[in-house]
Image 1 (tube, helix red, strand yellow):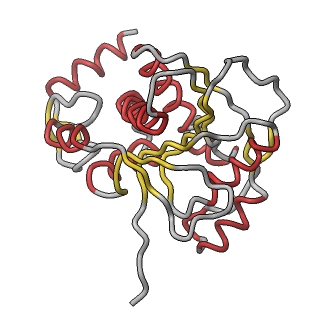
Image 2 (tube, one colour):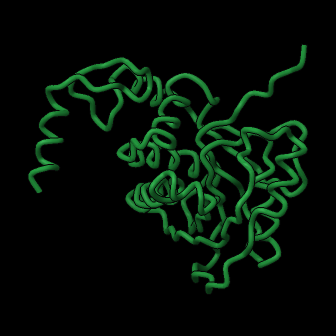
Length: 232
């Protein structure tokens, strides 16, 4: 009990590295400085589409481009153990879901799962944490929301090491439907959740698995979309 209290008190007076700009500043809230909070709050969700888009990719919305404070905050959360960022990032993801769906109504959120190895390295499935906070934010705003962990991930290579063709091949065999019973939510629109979209191969693969089960996704919501780099 006292360990958590001391950590909270220290955060009020000791300089802490901001997740968004890496500057050391005192009194951060959720690990992000006021300047980076301003940048993140100014982002507005919009449609994104990789070119070329893989078969089966549903309409996608993203909060912003993968750069600046958004990129740094995501990296701090995913790769550097800043789990406290799940709450504000989940709230931002809720804004993307609202933009993707367009009107208040029943929604079934399906997160893209981590591989078992990634979940162990990150002390839990990072997207499941985001999804829980995203769902809470939507419910507080009056949305009927359920979370459904409908797919499981098989071991696969790190996508950072793969080109577009490699990502597509790895994603095709990477996901399997879970045998659990689908949660009942009449008229729900199915929305896939991920943190970043690059080629769209992962979202398309999960979408195909769900479609076979009769859960065809209405759309996908992500926090960031990478910009395609053109060869010189």
